[in-house]
Length: 130
Image (cartoon, rainbow, N blue to C red; front, side, top):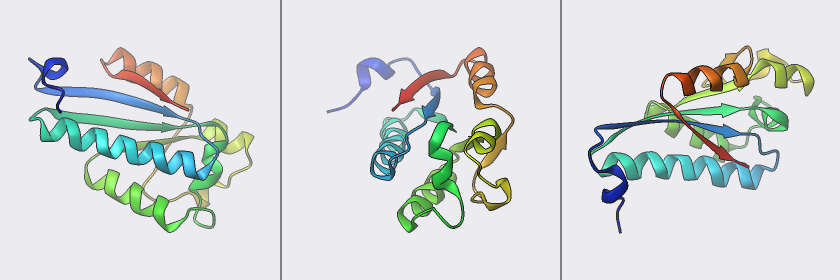
């Protein structure tokens, strides 16, 4: 199966994924799904430009002491593909996460809601994964 009908006429796609899952297994599944989506679009000769936007209690899982090896590997794979992974400083403040302890592959932004608004205004489709 393929997505030729939906992708017909496109040379590139742009999407931002809103991720706020706090359960590690669901988070890993959805990050894996984003990776698979990137590969699926790319394999069909369309250039994907993807952003992952992390907010809510999910931010607690992205610190050096909490991140599992599987999560680190998925982030590294996404980074290699050029996927930008943003994390919200409002959420890190609310959930008492030390920004100095965040994994290095993340982009700390002031407020991912502002970021999501800006990316959508630049033509990125919003995809919510929760």
